[in-house]
Image (cartoon, rainbow, N blue to C red; front, top):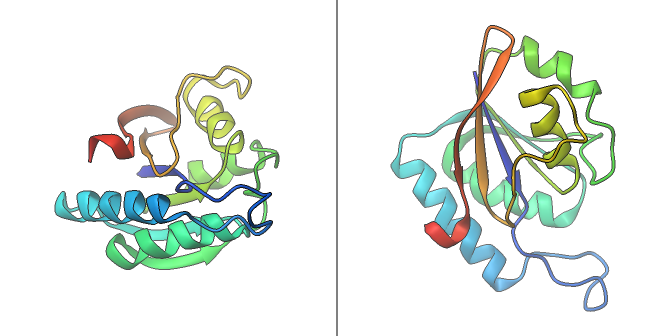
Length: 150
């Protein structure tokens, strides 16, 4: 099972728009990433996203290209606890994408990879994708692609 962790694309500042939609650059970065993933044959059964507009927009752009289903999930906000996701992710068999925020994604990756959410081992970038893979109950990093490389 592969898990794709995606930090939402670049968003406007809260001062400009409290809803923080994606900027034009954020939309372009995520669109290029979606093309990049599709060209490599990457497909996921489900894309989960937080309830925040920037994550919704990112998930929609990516989901149109590589996902069968796009689902809003509670518990994916920036400061939500990550431990509750461990059991669910370890029981899944189909590939999943989670579009979310920092520090949530960084903590989740650390928990899955080294068993300690407070040990930051992945540097996320807005619009970037981190692919983890689970074999049995062990997780490993497969690749990290920041938008500036696509």
